[in-house]
Length: 631
Ligand code: HEM
Ligand code: SF4
Ligand code: FES
Image 1: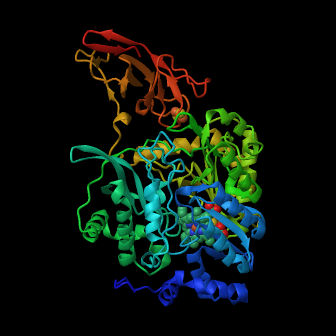
Image 2: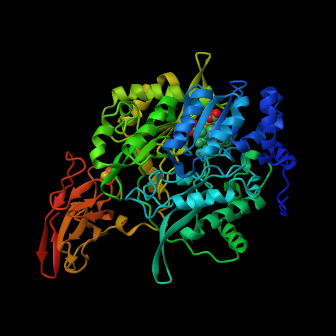
Image 3: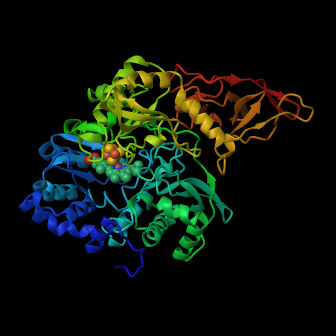
């Protein structure tokens, strides 16, 4: 069709695509709206997914519509339009998905044409959100706002989206294709699960330090198993990033297998070829050599942006609200839109953990915003359990589901909340079947729906996975229990959480995995002992003003800073959640933790964000030629 010789396809979907491009079903949408949904041909049921319209066999005559929201960046006008559509045609419920999109439910086919045009009027499309397409480009929900990004990568996500949406060069891939593009250093996008992940990196090119991306490829979830995306050993500048993504997708289009659908995601081509051949072919396609990977700028841990955080502009904050299992009512969505206008700039962001962020709230308005009734339900300060809860659709609407997920996930989380009152946030992710749409493999605790037999009765149960994580050292959650009846989950999960199993297992997994390619300088402190084996020494001019670094002193990891000529030493472990303070920026007499942006006084360690916290400090004593830290 495009003058390319693709691999021959044998599966049913290949035949459907060969007959007619999915995008070309638009002419039939109006016709089916007239004739009624029973008239829809089997092949068009598939093609409609190119238009984001999904027949739900569980609820005959009702459809799900998936709205593409690049980088999760939306606004009050769009949300009001979506809420109104849900109210009128969708029984007043909506789901925020793990690809930062919104799904309408209970749609009757006769309303599809008007819904498409009403969405279009506010700049939204549903195009290419299902089947063998490039799915919504996932990006950091606080791109351009957070202090913890290398740079704002959302324009790249937008540019790439504009390149492929509506373009038939990209609408017949062998299989679905997931991309994330992020400049955020906090690993909030599950990079390891994507076919392409562009993650923040710096490279020394032409004598200058350039901020751009390292490229990871071949991650996946779902049928055929989980694969962690691997480094392609390529650095791309922001201005060439969309073009490189496009070339990788087209390489997959032309060379990917089109046989058994559970063996043809891009990951399998990467495995068959190896990274070197992928890179060589890509360079040939682009007609130029690509730079080799730069220094990985990701921080060690992951966050989800729920809570109140100062933005780059220090007079503004963003407020991340936890949406339990991503389900909102149209009333709630309308209210979110109202709050965004009343307290912010009307902008709203959706996160890959199914949550919502209201950006640009000035300090004087924060108090009133947090007192709004909606924030008692969709909380900025959720419990440790609710903060990390994610669930796929499950049996309520999904024909592949083995068990019910969303309502059950919520109920079990509420029970756990009442039992566990303290501790770190726990990320519990539910997937209702092995497709793994709930990203259970990257969670602290991942639950995968199965059926089990108890006393001869078939009951809903789960396999329990533990210890997954995102970031520069990603770990794949390991299955530790099988066929656990859902009824027993509150007790089982309480035990796992109380005894810290996810963290223990993650540490063990990291210990046996290979070290990251390029550890960041701040993350690899050196033991300091002077020549005579006496106390550790910091040379007089070693640290320029405004800089920090990590040292190991007598077995303690210490962050040392120079501010207005004076040296300060703090334990290099943020009292909030263990962030590496040495990697933080200095503001006035404070260091700002790179993980969540809490500020700590350099001299006293007192936290200005949460006064209950205090970082441990150590005296720095001048000695001949330098300084010693009294640790
Ligand atoms: C065998 C592979 C897969 C199949 C057949 C499949 C199919 C489906 C179906 C039928 C739904 C439910 C639609 C609804 O909500 O009514 C769904 C939802 C979804 N899928 Fe998949 N899926 C697969 C793998 C994946 C993978 C690997 C991901 C990415 C991690 C993914 C991401 C999603 C997302 C984000 C949703 C919306 C769920 C939510 O957040 O509520 N899917 N998928
Ligand atoms: S994981 Fe399975 S049950 Fe859940 S949405 Fe995906 S396909 Fe459906
Ligand atoms: S770890 Fe959260 S602010 Fe430091």
